[in-house]
Length: 167
Image (cartoon, rainbow, N blue to C red):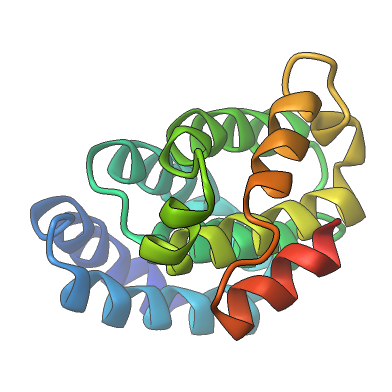
């Protein structure tokens, strides 16, 4: 499977770049990458750095929640199987938080952007499991908690469930 994915990766990464603003295309491509990450596991490492770059740069430009979800899958899949990923994972966290946290200043934003909120706190739960030192950093933890508290009472079941699990 790695050989097949190695041949497909240039096309997939080009599609990620060319269609990064199309939520439908990116969601389908995200499913392909999620499947490949889970099937290839450690063999996906050769594509991991490029995927992390795509996720963080595309999320900066287009705040599609699928990018946050892919970040969560990356963390969940590779935190314990691929050595020496701390720098990649911490940089991914800072990049995603720098974009996502300002999008959620109050309860209205949580309701309007429930997919972002759900995937943000899902991602943070994974970070707490595998890279808690990055989340508990003095520079970001207070902002994360303040943002989470702003979402208390959100009127979306999935978002509320993820948020309260995080808290």
